[in-house]
Image 1 (tube, rainbow, N blue to C red):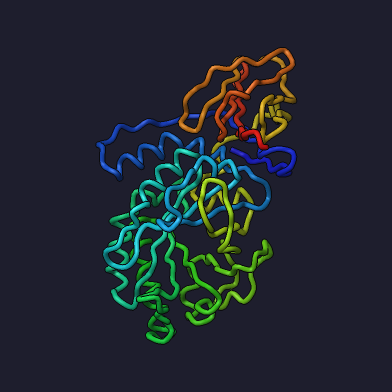
Image 2 (cartoon, rainbow, N blue to C red):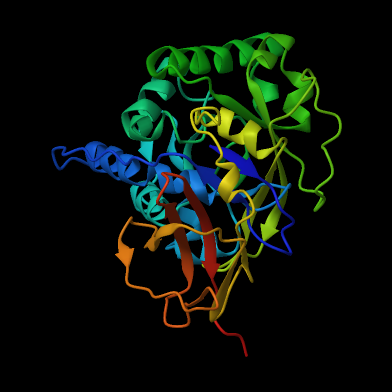
Length: 357
């Protein structure tokens, strides 16, 4: 599948595919298997959802954000989200599975992070808790797992890890956690740190990708990233306002193209090819309130179908002006699939917005 990045103001990415297949697994009704089943059912739709221009935005959340309306989050253009899974040796975030499941339903690319507690536990103990909680969302199509290494708080007071551990000791703790997670899952984790710890840790940790905390309210690349030569994500705000979330939320950007992002989550962009016959199809306006116009349709169209984020086909007619009336749809993310009699196929995402005022 190839991604064609158009400007955010004009339209979302046009995705063109030769063949779409969705695998359906029947699993036992455990949390882990339910999430894996849901992921398989939605995997192809996640691919379509990655389409919001050159700056790829996302958030990170925990139980502090309460109940989140993930459809609104997705409609706002947040492509991905990390969710707190665990902390220390025993704590599991009470909103983790709700956030993960509802985020997947909305078409957001999800991932899990662990809040490190080297002040209390061995790295192996923290890793065991994280894996027991989050292993169901580590793999192809998910964000990499993350070790969140920052000062914890106890009784309202910060526990400064650099006061408790030497650079070598803290680095070794982090490396052991990441090595364990990588060995068990086959996925290379990232590490989240701010400037203080990026400069305190030793260079061994730069073997793992950097998610850098620098809440300067800027989309510019971070500065002073310590022992790293490059960065994967930048957390540029702690005070973001996102529809669907009450209160502040952390905002992030990805350092790379959509192809880079797909590679990060393990979705190959070379397994599909683009049909030249359909390369000029586009949708406008997108996001759309009522009438969605389809441009560039060739002759020989066999089917045009609309699906929601759960893969449910919706009943629609397309008039002679090649327009779809989407005014009765709920706000959210939808997918238009077009196929031709000669076997070509096209798929793209559109966002249905709600009226304002």
